[in-house]
Image 1 (cartoon, one colour):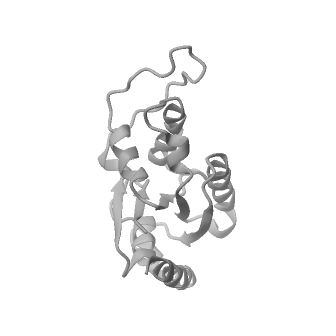
Image 2: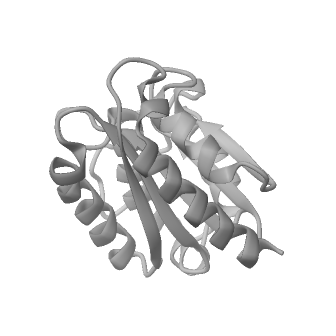
Length: 182
């Protein structure tokens, strides 16, 4: 099983990334930092007769990396009670991929499994649940099972290390991943 962590935060090694690294410790995995790429916001042309115009950015490169993995970990800090803009731009562009017959996006994405890692500061165990639900709806739409999620507490860099309960949860999920991975 090939695992990839898709990091949606703008801060390298931020709390959400640290929690994901804790989850993945001891596993073989790849990572994609969306902040390292230029992904333009979607221009909705789903219903245009000619479909979507070609966009000169890095979306296709990132999508190919994602589709080459089996297990996708979507990692985002909570930004204004939702996912980061980087993550949202990436997922919004999936609409474009559905219209591109050369990709077979629908066929390829359904072969994946997903996991979500979220870190926030304002009562995230309660207030980030709508974000988990949003990811669940996204994954339901593309027929990708959501295998689980972690919600951590953190504001300043490194705060996640003080969230012992979530770190323990990460260890439990890591063991499940290692069992599946071997």
